Image (cartoon, rainbow over all chains, first blue to last red; front, side, top):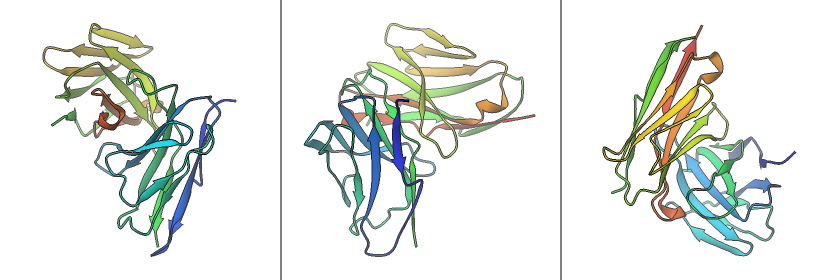
Length: 114
Length: 112
């Protein structure tokens, strides 16, 4: 059963804490993305990766970090430098970076600050 | 500045009725426009993609139209069902992944 998974579904962060959101895909896609969704706003791109061991900053990369050690995995770390981390985080993947290609999204992780 | 604006922000309709959602964009250069459906608390799912040369495209009860001259697209839902309750997002890329612009979406609620 192919798809893209994210975990956990809900995540709570304490002040000064780094947290990592997991994203895994078994679609054999080269490109992967992380978006942030806030109420009343469109999705905003945090980071994207075209290939293993390579990734690029999106529009709002400050306070976030990523890694792409395996084709299937693209974890996102929300660092303590991100002062307003409460949001719904979506991971996506596509065959390549052509804008006409469909992006397949995971179910999302909701991050809340304690 | 590249923008994608959607209207209305929210909409409530009775089950079985039709509705039309609007998307206006100022993205340039234009290559394609995509509509996504996002159920509450879930990731978006692609409904349809419109390229520059296409005027109308259907996917079941969903019909998308595109007017590249006026930079407008619409999504028409026929004979709505309770399962159509979701947010519908219009997306327009503009030459690179760092420049993909998402609309804020229209939240549709279908009531019995």
